Length: 151
Image (cartoon, rainbow, N blue to C red):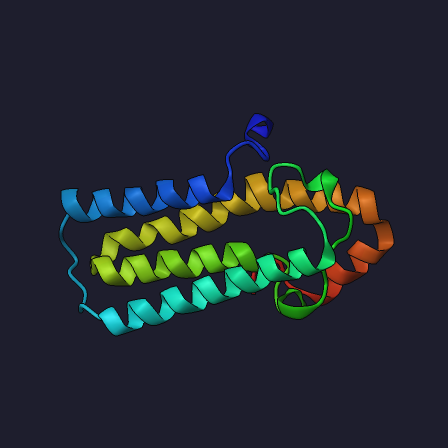
């Protein structure tokens, strides 16, 4: 399974999960939940905001945003939104999947969120952390002790 590490861009993983959730809503339309568009829109705005805050922090630090090549990072970012989460861009995508599940309004669609989190943790975040530990050593390890991986 190591061959899946850092291979699929997070945006593609997000789209696969979103499409899977949509397919479940169409093929298995039971477990109807209340339709709450305002809540879905709120979660979308939170997700986009958190993700953009992560991108902005990388931009200000002049480091790569390429998730498939974490060893190319020139700095690890620990300021701004990165004081709350080590992976705010992925948290943002997860919030958008929560919004999508709320919008779809079917119980089974919620399976996409833990699948996204599990895949991202195993095949994206853990390999990124390994690369950052090798590159930034004790400084990065100390940061990991202070800030949670997701939230």
